[in-house]
Amino acid sequence: MNRLDKYLATAGVGTRSEVKKLIRDGHIKVNGETAKKADMKVDEEHDIVTFDDEEVYYSEFVYFMLNKPAGYISASSGWDPNVIDLIGEPYRNLFPVGRLDKDTEGLLLITNDGQLGHELLAPKKHVEKEYYVEIDIPLTEENIEKIESGITWKEETYKPAKYKKISDNSFTLVITEGKYHEIKRMMLALGSKVTYLKRLRMKNLVLDETLRPGEYRPLTDEEVEDLRAV
Ligand code: URA
Image (cartoon, rainbow, N blue to C red; front, side):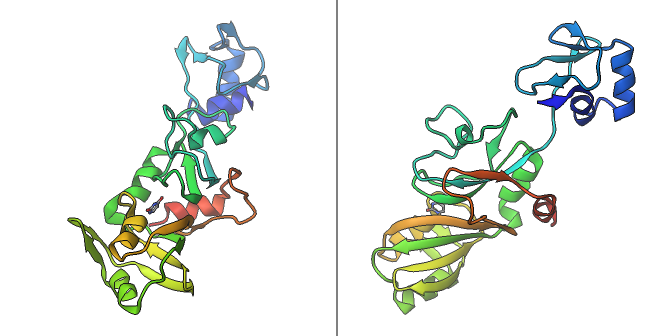
């Protein structure tokens, strides 16, 4: 829910004082009824707001950090269960920035800011993604060198990744592309199988470890600015 004047200002109809005047002068309707008060509450999801009978679309950009649980598909709709179902917010057009496999957990940015989403995913931007990885068979020194110099497997190439050992069967990996099943396939190319995968970071955005799987929170202004910075 939002105040009508804020809704209109955020949607770009005018400044707060301009939209207050539009309301006073009878230009604004909510669900077909002329609005009288600037502080009336509107439901962004369900109410229809019009300015001189033209629908006004609410277009505030919102950003949420989700700790994706296993079992959810990284899509907006049409798939069941999908990550957007976990976001109980009244905004249309929310989408996940990039895909995590159904069984992968961790950081997923959910937004309605198409421009930012596009930039974070553009291959030429080489945005870093850091993962915590567990595998069944430990990697050899030679395998680690391959990870660090790039892998070609089944006609696909994977760019050099940064490897940091945690134990024989676990490590973190920083990759700069987002190819289909990238880490699982890199490991298969080296004779190991991923048994657990969790995204920890995208660019400067670090997963808030207080979020349990399935929980989310809005990004802070600083986090949004960091994501936007080139
Ligand atoms: N690499 C994978 O194999 N799966 C993911 O979900 C992300 C990166």
